[in-house]
Amino acid sequence: MTKLIDPQHLTKKDFETDQDVRWCPGCGDYSILANVQKTMPEFGIHPDNIVWVSGIGCSSRFPYYMDTYGFHTIHGRAPAFATGIKVANPALSVWLATGDGDGLSIGGNHLLHVLRRNVDIKILMFNNRIYGLTKGQYSPTSETGKVTKSTPFGSADQPVDPAGFAFGANASFVSRSIDTDAKNTAEVLRRMAKHVGTAFCEIYQNCNVFNDGAFDAFRGKSAKDQQLHVRHGEPLLFGESGQKGLRLNTRTLGLEVVEIGSPDASGRIVEASDILPHDETNRALGSLLASLPFGPFPVVLGVLFAELRPTYDGTLHTQGLEANSKKGSLDKLLRSGTTWRVE
Image: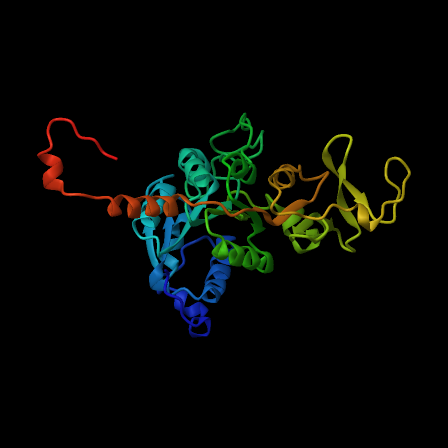
């Protein structure tokens, strides 16, 4: 088991290194780093029992700034390294920092398998919809028609939705946040730390140099009414006064935006009881929330889905114990003939 200590003995400074933070001034990564360093002391896990793993990209400098163990690995392969670390030492708390390029382009296959295997690691994906480290090329999450240095006539690609990808990979925990939303990010980090299995969080992160304002429609203080923060068991409400909400349309089996106290398309007055409550154990609902198009719908933040199921590393550990309990004499096996029977 990971060594637990009194959380009061840990502070933000215990997770800060002496390295100069080398991101562009104003980058959203600063907010994410500060929030992680502020929240991790609450987990009661000694920094010596924590490992941060990353691949290549702006987000992947993260291990340098966390005073824990860390691996800055190769492009897209951070999930493979993290899996190996967790399987080799299940007592460690393993966290992974990646970006939309590192995680969904060259690393898409590795990310898919760590999610479906349900390795007990925590993944933060910084999504800025651009390649920032290599100076502004379009990424797998860039919108169709995006004009960049590598697509001067506009990107012809259809973008990947990270949360949708996680659902497609059968992830056991899917969440979303925004770099500047300290409260929601901290809540999600706490939930990720408690989850046993792969916990995935997509964080909308502003690249103020190469893709500034990509999320301004719902990221700024004036756009709070465009955010829907989900909590298990609570109604799916949003808007300045909390009067707007999501209702299940039984005809289309989809979600629709309605306003409490106002008539719907049929002329019926919408009541508070019409608003659908969030059920984070419902994979179908979580997938629906992840795929809602922004504009007609608000951006959905918080824990979209969470379930407990066996972990990959836990299963391997159990298999190892069973195999060790049945081991016999190696000398007898080697001298038993040309045919070996392993049971």
